[in-house]
Amino acid sequence: MRFVVFDLETKMSPFSRGRLDVRELELTVAGVYDSTEDAYRAYTLEELPRLWPLLERAELLIGFNSDSFDIPLLNRYYPGDLSSIRSLDLLTEVYRALGRRLRLDNLARATLGRGKKGDGAKAGAWWEAGLYDKVKEYCLEDVRLTKELYDYALAHGALKYKDLSATKDIKLDTRHWLAESAAPAMTHALPL
Image (cartoon, rainbow, N blue to C red):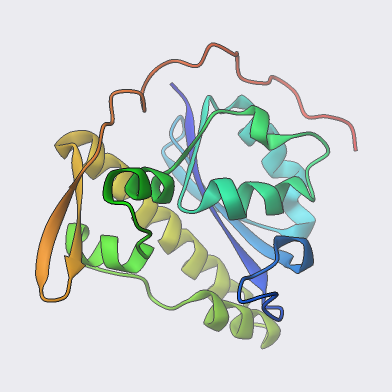
């Protein structure tokens, strides 16, 4: 099964009612891991047409907070509907099992022994300062963390998190993660 792990970076915008409004954000970088090629790549806004065929051939899109943030944001640029591709949002899986949301950094530090190298606000500032390669590197590191968390969960049926001073397990039902999709992967990019 071909899967793509992905993450997006944006220019920061003001919070709307205490939350980032996906409709007001501008994408700067899309980072992806392609399981078929075992390769990581970053795409800028101008390079997105090269990303579409890769996503369309995927049988599963994997992200962190991707169902409510990354997919809706990327759909603003995509000429079709990426929500028609089966997705696995690790944050949603954690929420189902634990009953609360956790940060990627918390899960990565407790499970993998290392965390994020910044945050979205820093990535936005780096972009504004012209540090484009630094934003790409940051985005791809988040993709790497997400992929490694996915791999760990598949192997162990759990992820770890820090709760106060204790490290705890989150038991996850991963049986459906590898199930083949009933719908075939798309095979061509839609016209722009």
